[in-house]
Amino acid sequence: MSDQQYINQPFPPLVVDVEVWQLKFFAKAVGETDPIYFDEELAQQAGHRSILAPPTYAVTLGCAVPDPFERVRLLGIDVTKLLHTNQYFEYFAPIYARDQITFVATILDFYEKGRGKFQFMVEETEARNQFGELTTRFKQTVVERRE
Image (tube, rainbow, N blue to C red; front, side, top):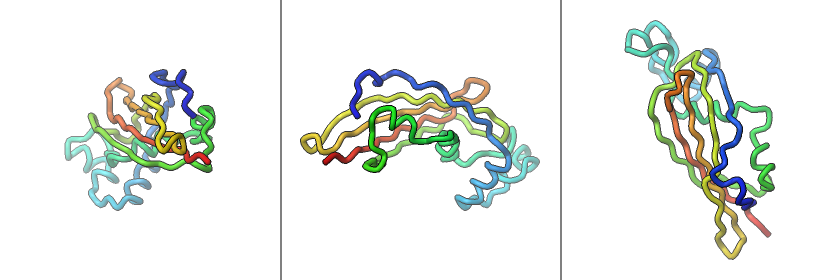
């Protein structure tokens, strides 16, 4: 997995449109009940530009690709031995219905533990809206179990 050439080299951007129906579906799925997640008029009355996305929605949008494991396979990671170990979020600006979000992922580090039995990869993704505003930054650490 630890192909050092990928460290600090951003992957090609992913651009995703925030669809109203998907946003409402996600809000319902995570148990939101506040009308700012469902009703545009009420969201605007509350000072929002449109229907508001729940905080973790950016991660869901970042998976809006035909093959969410393409990048890890490119790195030579066996997805059948992959474990998600850690995730961290920072929020900077809201995401709204009809926004267009651009995600750029970067590998920050590779390291081993357990005498090479476990290889870790730390990845950071930044999400920006159509105005260039940073909305979300999230880091995740995954580990590949080795024989």
